[in-house]
Image (cartoon, rainbow, N blue to C red; front, top):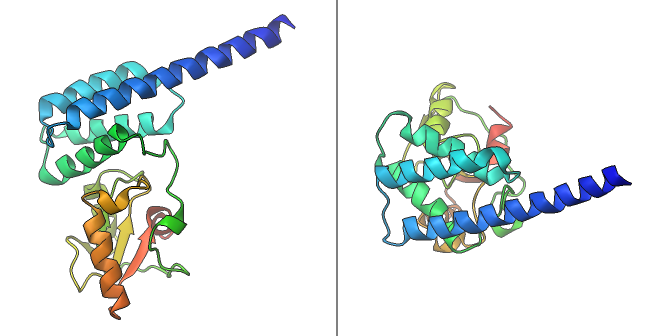
Length: 204
């Protein structure tokens, strides 16, 4: 009985820690994203907070965010794509609409149904959102390694891949513009496919 009580209190205590962590992270994200920009010093501050909390957290998004921040800081440069991607993520936390560690339900995104078979040789890919696979440059490298190319969204893009950590408010995020454009082009008859990260990863 004592063991059962201990497990119960440990679980409740763990839940309380996890909840407090998320509240702190939401507050931190709100502060960092408040002015619409984020600099390297602020990313380093976020990295320190995540490092102090990642080991006691059971929230997958805390671990994913920690890994992403480490990747961003690895080369000592916060480039434009990394800035936009990280700011989107922090804004999502600020609005409390981030799905913690869960992929956005496909029905809320204009994905191709049924999802297409994907090939890479000679094909053009564009990535938008925040990816479980890694930073966008790693996603793009995976395409290049398989004979394809990746870059900005144009009418010649074959596949738009949407990152797993999209949120219900994707229409109001900076990467929502790409989704709207691709959907409009597809509706006009252009042969562009819109797929989720999970589908894309299945073909790597």
